[in-house]
Image (cartoon, rainbow, N blue to C red; front, side, top):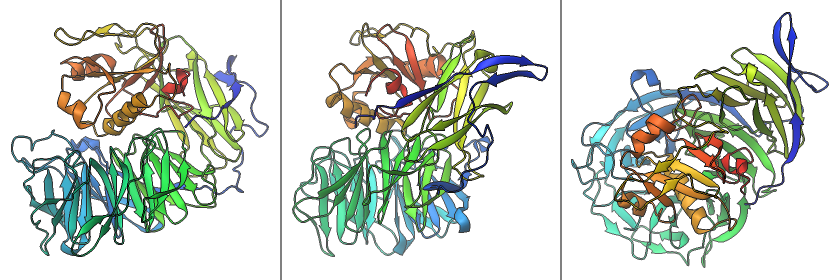
Length: 597
């Protein structure tokens, strides 16, 4: 996707002294801050409930893939096992159960439910976790009996020398996408135990699965989108595969309609057909799509930084709804009339309206700047109706002049340095449109000023020299005369896996010949690079890459997953710091700060 030319509208703010203290003056909109709500606009996406895991209990939630059964959502929770949430009336969400991993139990990065035997299967996509060296099974089975009743049934549901990218239950079969080992199947008995595993012939490199009726959709990293016909006695290929224009990150089915998330290339909707899947339309949210859900004419596209809604049959270019994520969203699904989505530590429920509009402004997740400098924050209207946005600085609840944004327009909000907290304290810029409902949180960006003893380089500072260690290919960062994106790797981080796959795809299919170079600072782990097909990414190898990031480059205070990324210009100066991946399609992300499509 090539971003639209965002129209700039600059709001200049200056300081004025008064007996009450310092305030911001500028050119407010006629109704001024806190004006009346605009009630004639219906929100296409509106959050109705949210529940999260309390970090004070010692938990380390990494909520990822989910499966919904009735009024219960089960969520793969990485090293913390599984979490269950009750979906209540009016969009309420309640955390009902956490099942932490016991010794020898595989990590949970993908999940599938067999309702007939009340068995929940959980699998690991990598070689990390307590199970390493203790079991050769990447699959565990849990007994479930409702939103607050489940227990470990088997820590080793099957013996398998492979790692599982995705699980899917189709009738009484468990399907396993096992990367270059292809697509495997095992029968599920009435008590939830698994029979012998067999491989499906010519199933390629399987990374994602979905099914509906007698059809199964598989994402293959080489061939693209494959279909299979499922009968009581066999699973047979259905026609030829359809090539995909983007990294194959997620797939979903609604009847014979198939949705595919393709990272920075957006999402695509296909119709099942005997010869090969037929492309119906493409969707281009201003982000990197990592998940997708379909219900009738609605398509919900999940990005780590937010959720986007389209009435895809009517007009795939018309954004019907947008809600920002608070931390990092990795999966979503329709549950009856609701849309549910993971958000790292939380599960959120949303109301989806196909006749609604996008009513929230788009902001960067945070900005990390040098002390004593004024700060600019881009503010974008990604939707099709004008937004009247009230701006507030917290915790002092100081109002800034309001902004009116035309569809597709950008405003640059300038905040004087005197209004920013110095050191490791943070200030939040809240942007709430009057088109949103009264209880809506709106969009929020955290503003962080580096302290004198903070080792992480802020925006405007030179990126410090970083060299590969002796015995490795000699690399020195920052690169000379090149725009660059510097990513610190953590092999086990589930939020990094889709990002790295997207960046590797972009490296193989550059949007422009002189685009930014992506540099992965990583430990010496060729198996990890091969496992996720990251060979196209340039690497700087350091055995201390994890502690290097934690001690010198991690930026705390800005919400995000584990990692911190640096966008550095030709002169070696940091132009943006991100805590959540937005991709080159974002008008407010790091690629945009480098002037890269």
